[in-house]
Length: 233
Image 1 (tube, rainbow, N blue to C red):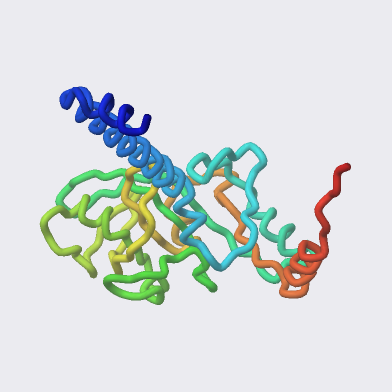
Image 2: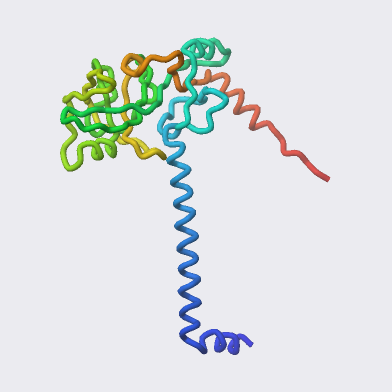
C-alpha cells in the first residue's frame, strides 16, 4: 500500500512539485508573519525594554501603551516616593516636539526627558559620547537611526546646536536604542531641560520609574516560590 501511495503521489510530476512548492511557501509565510508580529510587539515596548533599572512603571490608568501618554502632576512623584517598599522613584518625560536644524530643516522627534541626578532611562549603548554627556548644559542626544535620518549621508554634527521651541540645544552624543513603533527620531535630554523648553502646561510628567526595596523583592519571590498549584479531582 505504501508503494501504491508513493506512486500515486509522484505519478504526476507537475502536481507533485506544485504540492511541495505550496507547502514550502505556506511554511515560509507562517514563519514570516510570526517574526513580523514579534517585532511589532517589541517595537511597542521599546522604551520599557531599554529602561532596565526599574521594577515598576507608574502611569495614569487611562494609558494604553507607552506612546499614548496621559501626563501626571509633579506631586505624584512625591506620593510614589512615600509608598512603603519604594527604594527610589524618578520622573520620565516622553512626547513629540519639533526640532529645527541650523539649515532650517524641521523634523518631528520623540523627546525623552530623564532624571537629572540619576539619569535613569538614558541609553546604555553609546556610539559617540557617554551618559555623562547628558549632564552638559542644554545637551541633547540622538539615537543612531534618527541621527542618520535627520543628517543623511553625513557624520552627526556632535557639538553643533539646534532649536526646539526657540530654545537652543547642543548635540552631545549618539546612542544605540531599540527602534520604536512610531518611526520618529528619538532624542534624550535632562528632565529639567525638557520642562523648560516644552510649552507650559499643568501636567508634564509622563511616567514615574520605581525601584522596589530589596526586602520587598525577596519577599515577593519567596511568596511566589511557596505557592502550590491548585489540585482538582
